[in-house]
Image (tube, rainbow, N blue to C red):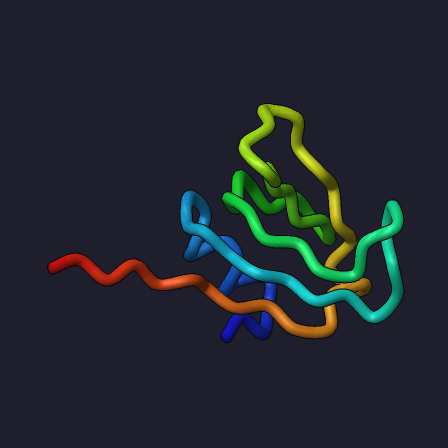
Length: 71
């Protein structure tokens, strides 16, 4: 789980799943690549697009890193 902005900064470049307190752009859940963290904002690329989505840290209810299992 990701609790603080420091946690988000540590996992830049990783796949994450976020749940928001209230919908943002019609969605309450986002899953994508964590691109960067800037002040109080988390930036993701979602659904394979190159456009970043800015999500305020205060809007995030829960965040998790999605682990990859390789055999």
